[in-house]
Amino acid sequence: MYRLQDRVYIVTGAARGIGKGIARRLLEEGASVWIADIEAAGIDGTVEDLSTLGPVAGGLTDVSKRHQVATMIAATVSRFGALDGLVNNAGIAHHAAFIEIDDDDWDRIFETNLRGAFLGTQLAARQMIAQGTGGSIVNIASTNGMRGQPMLAPYGASKAGIINLSQTAALELGRQGIRVNALSPGTVWNEMSASAGWDDALWTAIRSHNALDTFGTPADIAAAAAFLLSDDARFVTGTTMVVDGGLTARQLNIDEAIQRQSTTKPQSIES
Image 1 (tube, rainbow, N blue to C red):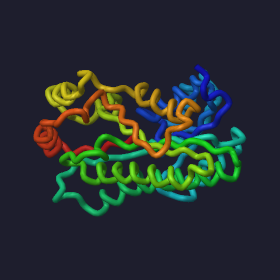
Image 2: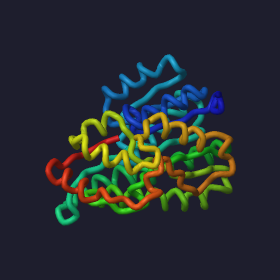
Image 3: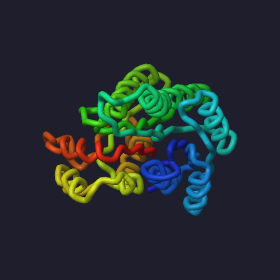
C-alpha cells in the first residue's frame, strides 16, 4: 500500500526499536522520513539501512530542548519541502522503587517523555498551521500510562501525561485540520527488551498474560502508527489506540515478580 505517498514525516527515537520500525513502515508506504535520535551512530546506521526503501535522512535531536526540536523541524522542511506528520516516540524508563526515586531520574524521564512530546506536538502544529495543510501527530504512550506498575512510577506518570496531552491538543488543533492521537503499546520484544536482564521465567509470565500469548514487535506498532497518520484515520483524533495483544484486558498478577527482578538489577531503558 502507498497510503502515505509523497508525504513527509518525522519519527523521534528512531535509531532503533519501535521508532525504527515505524520509520521503516512509513517509507514502505511511500513517505519521506526524517529520523531523529540522540545517538549519532544509530542515526547513520538506520539511515543507511533504510535508504533503499525511500527518501530518508536524519539528525541528532534532544527532544527535551526546544531549540533542537525547532531545528529538527526546520531541517525536515528544508530537506523534503513540508511536514505532514510527526511521531513522538523518543522515551526513556528507569526501574526504581517508589521510595528510592530521586529528583534527577524523575526530571530526566519527564523531560524526555512528556516535555519531548509537548515540544514536538506544539512546534509541528505551528509548522502545519503555517503551511495550511493540516496533518497528523502520533504520540507514543504506553499501557503503563493506563495503569500502575511497581518500579516504574515516573515512566507511567509521564505516559499518562502523554495521553492527556494528546486529548487536549486534539481539541485545540482540530479546527486547523490537525489530528492528534496517542498510541499505547504493550510489551514489545526488541533489542531493548533483550538487554533488560530479566530471566526467561519472568518473560514467560509476562507473555502468558497477553490474550494472544505472544509479544508484540516494532512492526505491530508501526502498522498502527501508519494507520493513524493516514487518511484512513481522517475521523480519528483525541483517542488512545491500545496495541497490546490483550494485556490490559485482564487483571495482572505479575507485579510482585517484576518488582523482585527489578530490585535485584535496576535498569535504564531508552527508546
